[in-house]
Amino acid sequence: MKKACALLAVLLFAAASHAADKPAPADVVTALQELRTELEWPGLTADEAAKNLKTPQEAFRFVRDEIMLVNYRGSYAGADGGLFG
Image 1 (cartoon, rainbow, N blue to C red):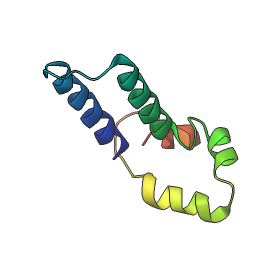
Image 2 (cartoon, rainbow, N blue to C red; image 1 turned 135 degrees about the horizontal axis):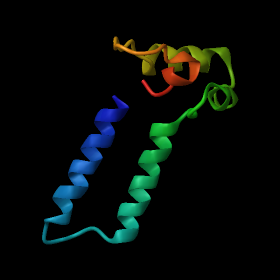
Image 3 (spheres, rainbow, N blue to C red; image 1 turned 90 degrees about the horizontal axis):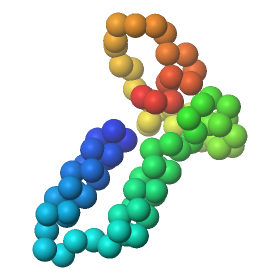
Image 4 (tube, rainbow, N blue to C red; image 1 turned 30 degrees about the vertical axis):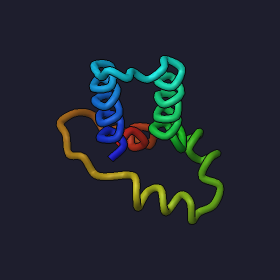
């Protein structure tokens, strides 16, 4: 879901760059920073996520709603690899 949001944001900014009313560069930077913050939440490592998911209920909701199984050929992703799902 997050990857889809990122792709949508890039496509919208690309379309806006060809529009007559271009967004101000500061607005684009702000929007991209907000998107980055959302994509990186709760953290890029298991340790960072543990700090941001303060209760067992928050951790459960994150795993239930944000993590998905992706079958692939390669090495096991481990705890940190699961956060990029």
